[in-house]
Image (tube, rainbow over all chains, first blue to last red; front, side):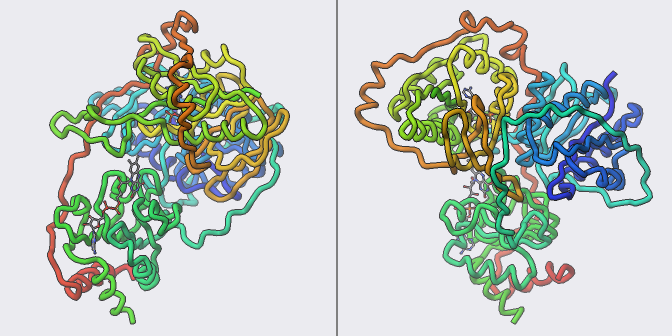
Length: 329
Length: 258
Ligand SMILES: Cc1cc2nc3c(=O)[nH]c(=O)nc-3n(C[C@H](O)[C@H](O)[C@H](O)COP(=O)(O)OP(=O)(O)OC[C@H]3O[C@@H](n4cnc5c(N)ncnc54)[C@H](O)[C@@H]3O)c2cc1C
Ligand SMILES: Nc1ncnc2c1ncn2[C@@H]1O[C@H](COP(=O)(O)O)[C@@H](O)[C@H]1O
């Protein structure tokens, strides 16, 4: 019998990635929607010197954490990690296995899917049990397809575990609770020394000063702001927020790719998203529509951005930002 | 050295429109292109060929008309092309596709396999890693630079969200490339002319002999339950405002959060 929802807990620089905690909470929600199943949320933690993080996974909602901690696992290696996950799947038979849609997650999950011969749905934007059958364990996983022009709901009826990768900021993480108790299980694994890939050097990326996925306020610009990028920056400083951009500004070379919002950029969920001169193509809104409040400024009253905005202002964004900035002088 | 590049013919999704009544894609008149990440893979292979000498083979799975994409690949200067095509392959999801392509590749010689990171029609980024698993090859996905290639080894740079890694990979191996890796060359007129005389090798399931349970719709663990376009729910009334009034409205909304 397969049961439980497993979540791969990704660690970078000895810190758990937010997306993993978001998935732990999503798994908990799924389980709460089918209490009769008696499923548990199980975190899977793999790496070197990561055991200390297991308690954190529990504080964020996991019932159990399976830990595979080994000195040979300090450099991520797809083959080793996939082999370990296969072992865990064989031993525990999870019904569902979720991964963050990070670069690592999108490297690892497909390898696992081929290894254990099961389906994998990429970039899920919503996950629920079959809404038409309260006894069904079938997951309905929805994702954008064809460049976001269409949404598709994907199922994996005859293979286990049902697997998906999910991007950051799509779901909410739980509030950390130190009173939460859970079980920590050690998973022993004989590492096969695999020297097919060796590290030549690790290059620290120049610490980006901004991380829009964590910003509370985002001042975002589109093609309508292309001759006034500095206005966006000035406004972001005044509002203690970060600058975001539509792909149009990245394609024009006016902004770095790291601040692109949207389907092929970042998914953001700030308290306030101020969209200036952005038309609101589906590929853009896919990355920001879950913001708590969206304020849109556009000269074109028919711009689709107004369909997702909480405050819709028809007007010239440059003039309005300029005026706004004078209020902070 | 033998290099296989996996390339997929995809609709140009920037031009894709949806029929709002039926919720289906309007495919008529949409041009097809070589998937951008794969084009970077072809270019990377051709550069290795120029520098170190290599035979470059482009492999695609698709309908018969994917042959036109392979002619284009000849026009870019690749040495051989293979079209993997059979009615029985239709409807394959990524895992079934990977099984078919992996089986086709077993009939070819290779030191290096290059796939694109992801195809723009599905954006799954799964086929590369799945093929690496099915062929038991080491893999590096999201390669943004090839720094060196020598007898038996390739050195690449890939980045995660926080770091970049330069990795030395023993071949045979599989890498997946980002379109940012390079800029593809133009087709060469002479190569384009000659491309029409060149042979596109074809594999069907009589050649590959895959079990029917493993391929096509039947062999696909995932199913599309439904497709739909997102319903638009208007959330606010539009306000036509001058700059001062607009600034007032924004400041009011921002105030609790500053
Ligand atoms: C596969 C795929 C993936 C994609 N991924 C992304 C993605 O991740 N992120 C993304 O953003 N896009 C993405 N796109 C591109 C997307 O389809 C749009 O082309 C893009 O978002 C448009 O950017 P824009 O709104 O800035 O430009 P435009 O569509 O040109 O809109 C500019 C807007 O500015 C308004 N304007 C002009 N002047 C002013 C002014 N003075 N004041 C106020 N308003 C003004 C205009 O009325 C117009 O609405 C993707 C496309 C594809 C096919
Ligand atoms: N039908 C196909 N034929 C050849 N290569 C493919 C095919 N499907 C996927 N690929 C390769 O796998 C990569 C990832 O595709 P995907 O997993 O669909 O995003 C693509 O960039 C191609 O290199």
